[in-house]
Amino acid sequence: MAVYTLPELPYDYAALAPVISPEIVELHHDKHHAAYVKGANDTLEQLAEARDKERWAALNGLEKSLAFHLSGHILHSVYWHNMSGDGGGEPLAADGVGELADAIAESFGSFRAFKAQ
Image 1 (spheres, helix red, strand yellow):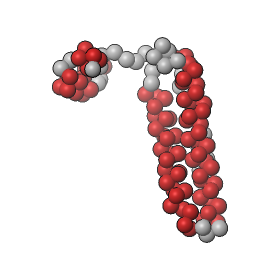
Image 2 (cartoon, rainbow, N blue to C red):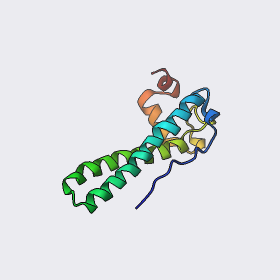
Image 3 (cartoon, rainbow, N blue to C red):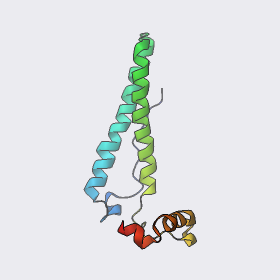
């Protein structure tokens, strides 16, 4: 059976300050994300037990619970790597994010207008 673990943060809790406080990063990682990991592992155990005891009616709900917890874990694992203390600011084509800059310009007219809204 698979066992999921809480990944280490790729940076210190304070790396996203002042945008996100170290306390919030710690809470979000160590409590919130950890709850998804625990929920996925607990649900896997419950699924195995339900299958062993042939409690087929329980499988649908347990599979939905697993999908919820596992998707939360995966999305948070991606989230941590998308955050950066060096990020932010206007996306520029020179940075390799031209499509985003183009979409902002098309939808808002400019990055300044985007920020204002």
